[in-house]
Amino acid sequence: MSGDGEPLALLSQVSGVVRAIGESRGPEDATRVLCEAVVPWLADAAAVYVDGAVWHRVDPDGRLPPRWAGDGIGEAALLDGHLLAVPLRAYGKPVGCALLARDARRPPFGEIHVLAAGQFAVPAALAIHHGRRDRQQDETLETLQRGMRPGDPPDLPGLEIAYRYKPAAERVGGDWYDVIPLPGSRVALVVGDVMGHGLAAAAVMGQLRTAVQTLASLDLPAEQVLHSLDEMAQRLAAQTLTTCVYCVYDPVLRRCTIASAGHLPPILLGSDGKAEVLSPPRCPPIGLGRTPFETMEIAAEDGSMLVLYTDGLVEERGQDIGLSVESLRRRLANGTSIEALSDDVLSAGRTDDVTVLAIRFRGIPSEHVAQWLLEPQPTTPSRVRGLVRRTLGSWGLTSMTPVAELLAGELVTNAVQHTQRPITIRLLRTDHLLCEVSDDDHRLPVVREPGPLDEDGRGLYLVSQLAEHWGTSRVAGGKTVWFSLTIP
Image (cartoon, rainbow, N blue to C red):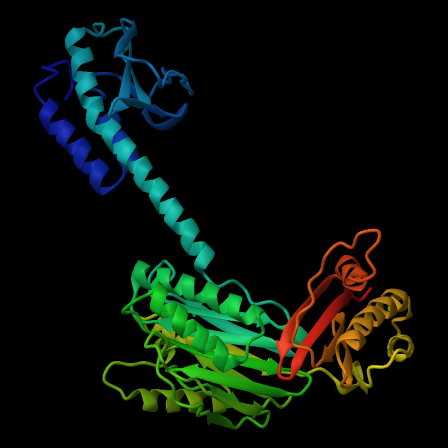
């Protein structure tokens, strides 16, 4: 296409190519086609500027400025006879600008060239507009999906965690897992699988995952968490079924409670290497409604490991799912690591989401736990302060004694005022110092800032101000109020 030729002769053909490239490959490729289409036929150099930045340029001799701030020009304009500025406008709004330059030895641009350049710019402007809009939508979607994607589990005392999470597609799917700290150094372990794929499953997953986290924060029993989740699922996601397993591990008692809603059975790998497929009570998936959920309790011996997973880890077309679970059990018994299991599945090109969460139980040493059962008497708070002082001294935490004594005494004082039965006080030393006070009064205290004449409410206010964290939860037979302090 050397020489001037007839500028409008190839207008329709080149415009169509630019438009097609913009739709199939994106705005950057469309601007490249535009620049290369006009050089050397219409100009000797060309550049497309968007937001003052160069998107593409064909400029062998460096004729064009490296930056151009004229994106907002209204009409195609001859800056001089050999430099032409063409606005890129889509739906009446400027999206960029194209600069065309001719060598001084060639005839200057004429009106026909201005018209041709303006027509060439139309499909490129539309490609830029739609490409930027699509990119913004993709970025918004990616941000939302990143927010739903399970993150790294927290580092908690009494257990070690291994996990793998891989959606079948590039974006998050319907699988999820969570490791949620609970009062008393306990932890909730969750793995769920929304049936289906793509954005619809991901949207339901995000809602249910948030619901599980909220229910767990209330420290409800495992079966009550699934029951409440089932009720929520019927309102949030009609016609959608979800399997879920919810476990609560107590590192002090070394017990684990498991509730399953139609989920694949967990596998317990003993400290001796023996692997066992557990059999929690059979309950239907989440979303059916009017379903009672039940639990099983197992001994969580130190060194043993509980493995939770979704069907993407074991399911194979044409094979009974029970045989697949048994195959997984054998591989675990043979010493295959969770990471190796997951990587093997992913390398096999499975089309389903893969999620696996393995928890190695470590427990909290008994010498780091102190517990007392005391009658609610007027002298009990003073006695508790002495017990806390001596215990912290034996743990080498003397510097924490003043604050810990004060706060424990205030919680016990409140308990003495509201119960007639013995009060349980427990201290746990992990990476934090945790103090729990339990009584048989189901009413949860509410913190408020006391006025200058108020006689009540000062104790809990002190706890809220001086403790790093504090909280209350209902337990079988009453409530527990707790606080934690960072160990220096």
